[in-house]
Length: 387
Image 1 (tube, one colour):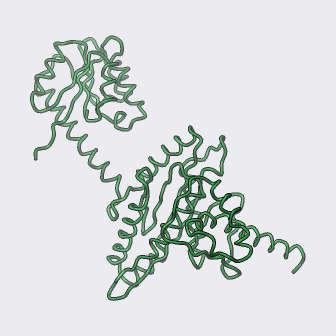
Image 2: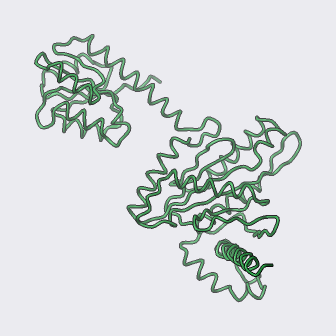
Image 3: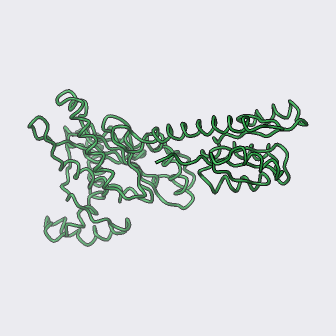
């Protein structure tokens, strides 16, 4: 299959100039035409395939310099980086060309021009655009797992936070890691460990919704962004993912092994309307929680809370909960309160058989948080009494 033709936008108020450039480009390119900068800007926004712009310096409505400035200041990375060749005339001074160059003109072509002038620039800059596009695509994905890379993670996360702040929604972030990755490498080698990591990556990606993102950072460490998800629901997701990964069995050199998944969780719901945290700060919080999870014997799910950063000492006391691999999602935090109230007497009496399995994940987080609080309060009470 032949490569698709590159698309070029020609912005000039002169029908003669537009026709001349179009004729010189011939059948080698797909050409689009605009009679002024405003029309050209509209075409650029609506057509993501345009790879190069020729723009005249002097046009009505919006001249070439204003169009160039609008392009370079665009929030859209595709538009702001597009090559722009300015068409100049003998009346344009060196000072005007310098000013245009400072705004971000890629190149200049002076009237009158010939076919070689047009074609040489078109071939050079469309070829460069194609190479940059391919490099950007490669940079967007992790070579080992095929998941999104750190670059795409930051872009997606920042846009997600911006959207949820405008609409008063919450986003949760999971940092998850295949525990003891270095030990796996030392024991079974890099190739076998990479197989484990890619298998886990595939499971994580297939287990989340299409609007959620999974990225691989390095050495079996992943980030999962959960838009429109409060911490309570994120904990359920984390529980399901952790159980699914730990149910995997890997046959390496005739040895069947299981891996543990450590999980750190943070949510934007802890902030308020004036919260100025960026996506990177939330990632730091989730990474902090992940480190705490890795330090626990059972790699339990740890939620970051800047008002309570004390972690349980596994040597003193550890609370573990057995949860099913398949979890029925709940619609809101109110479901947790209702379920807790309905089954509270059964929990106190030790009669757990009457609690439906699908409600167990709903009860986990409030009970776990209470036990952490109770443990900390008791320890503080003992210290105060001198015990």
